[in-house]
Image (cartoon, rainbow, N blue to C red; front, side, top):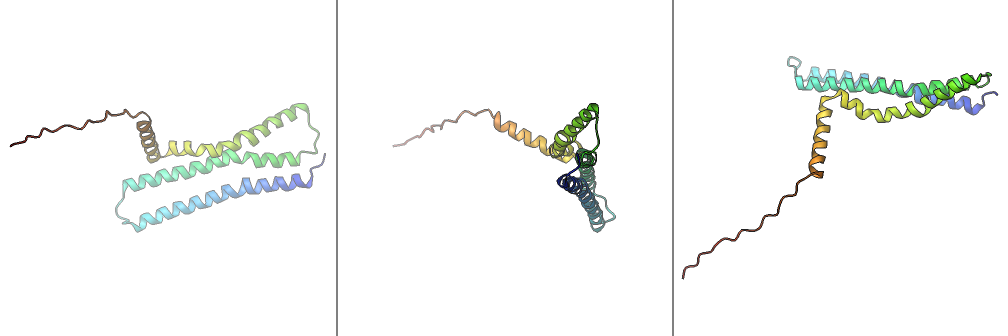
Length: 165
């Protein structure tokens, strides 16, 4: 079986649009962001170091790098597998090889592709102390709203009037 024109175009489309462009753009914009953070530090009193600001910038850097790495590891196998399937479609394959390729297709096309969108929360939770404290405060707030102990309504107090006649 020969690869059809659609298979070839789709494989290269997926390879470029999913595999090359997003990681390249993520890396470029992450580097621009890090450069702008460094330039902002130079403009804001270069002699003084603000530990709180530096700590947040370090957390942001870790978040950016982690986001790019997780995207590459979870999404890049799919375009490579798609390209591989198109190139090897005309090769006679044994049953074992077909089973292995079906398993790899499942892992790259179904399992790994959904890790990236769901991993953002966990990346931020593990890399940023600020994000962890905000999540903790949000959960505490929700917990207080759900498990709020109702207060007894206060009865109006009767004040004694003294009447003098």
